[in-house]
Length: 198
Image 1 (cartoon, one colour):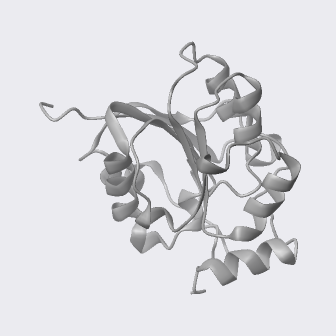
Image 2 (image 1 turned 60 degrees about the horizontal axis):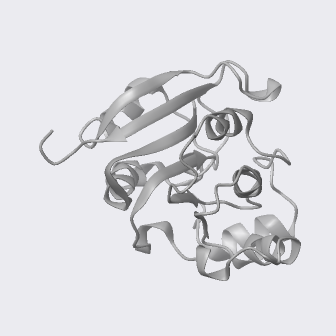
Image 3 (image 1 turned 90 degrees about the vertical axis):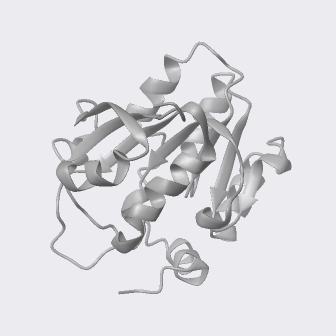
């Protein structure tokens, strides 16, 4: 197991060993964002990397969107390419150390990049960052990999066990609009944080 710290991820970007990076905003997330009528939602994208989803959301008028990544390398590249993006909405930080309160968190190749033993803590942390009724939306790999990760695979049954204590699983189903290379190997999730009274 690699030490999946800032040095590891920065070296991946510097070596251009970024196989997870498709070069544009993920279609499932893009199509979900297109359906949002409330433009003032507070949104977080953890493990944002090159942050294509953030650029896409911004272009849709979703200006209250925040970037978080453990590596400064993609953050600097993003800010260089998007100099008008508010610096106060960019966090160079470990996800598990982040404090905030959001209406929506987008998941795109972040869950699969974490050491699998952190998955229960990931679900708990996601819930803690969301306002009551807030949503975690995105895609998860629905497959195993034949090599040591990252990325790390898994399946729907495993994932549900992490999320069910904190979320209503509004959608947890095969993703119909994955990119061709990931077709039939992704789940689309739309999870609503349980209210205290739930």
